[in-house]
Image 1 (cartoon, helix red, strand yellow):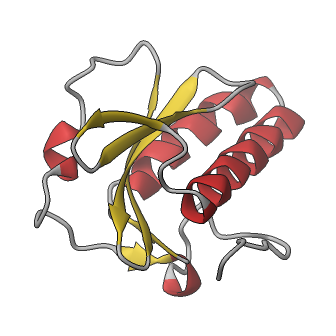
Image 2 (cartoon, rainbow, N blue to C red):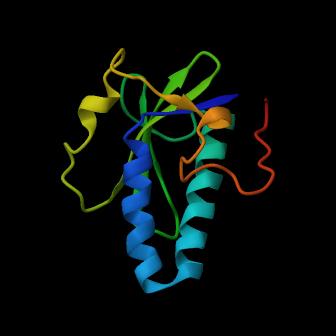
Length: 125
């Protein structure tokens, strides 16, 4: 399964990481690891998480007050935004519109903060 990211997701994640790094480097690493893990679960089982509108899902992180929205694709998922639970609910929804995406895949994302630092196994790939 492929994982694609809207270009603005990089900024979403960088903002969260800056906040957690100010608290603790370890906490920021744990946030990033959990986000990476839940994204991998969503890619492996796209229908597993809450459907908020046709084709658009919301996946909550368990330990952190963040969630991400993603669209199902024929060959994977497209993560459109990562946001704090208390952020304005309309924030970033324009990114989720079908056809409004110029994204990057996980394998060629370069500096994207979600780039795995170690092996990530996505079931069904």
